[in-house]
Image (cartoon, rainbow over all chains, first blue to last red; front, side):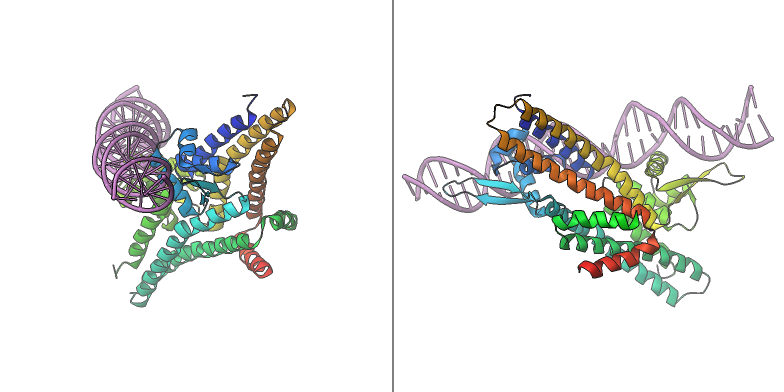
Length: 181
Length: 181
DNA sequence: TATCATTTTCAATAGTTATTGAAAGGATTG
DNA sequence: CAATCCTTTCAATAACTATTGAAAATGATA
């Protein structure tokens, strides 16, 4: 270990990143592969991944593909080599922007769409209403609109993140903290 | 349905919120209970929850407790009633702050701690190094520090969110969008 | 203290998701 | 075009997570 601190640190980080991935919607193995590629100095091939994480070929293949779909890992071809190599996005700011954007698409937009349908239902209900339940309708409408409003703010922040590069982000964060803290 | 738009909308929202919860680390049932309580005009008791979501007593009990641990649901006692009632946080801004804070505690802090251990390993490695691998050590150190830096910015934003109330947030978001967009 | 209402626990089970490994599919080479 | 090298697929299975329901614990009431 003391001869191989890079290896020791790599192992430690991969394990923890995998555990954390599991608490997101990402499977442990997928997160481990991501960590491995993030730390690797050079692109790795499927066999490297299989060997270093002790996983099957099938699992490596499927998880590498999923990471590609997330936009977190890219395929790399090497001249004179049939193998495909894989390389992770190394810019952390870019990486988190990708994750945020993807999660918004998968997790926020469906909610927004559903709430809009709910609001339409309530609005129908108001139109042909006997009059006894207007208060209920309005109360519930407010609860839906509150979530919608929050989703809007989330979107603004995601946009903001896309537009601010990492170098700008640190001073911006500091400035904001100053402003409100 | 057309007589009960509130019910129809409730059902729709609960289902979707549950599905989304599943893509977070939250179980579908836990998210459904949360949605049910969020939309309810008054606190509900365990039997209400069981009945409305068709789940067992055990499941209701355990998930209500978990929601309590998250700080998203509170127990309410009613005078002259032995039953316990449950009420969800209704302020969406507060609700998301709670979620964000809890997720940071569970998902960001362990990473920070691990990276600090990794950096310590690398620093040991540098001290008694033969000299051949300094470049590797430095490269990897940068990758760890990049993540750490991002975690810091995340923390700043969480803090920011705590300090900004919902009413302030909308104009702030608008201002930021103006500024950068 | 006994009784009754309610909540919690937990072992068994059901349900879900991840992984494997072998076979099929593609692509490149000689 | 056959051989080789590599990737993908997918049915079987392993691993994990959630749910149930009945029994135990809690705690209020009389």
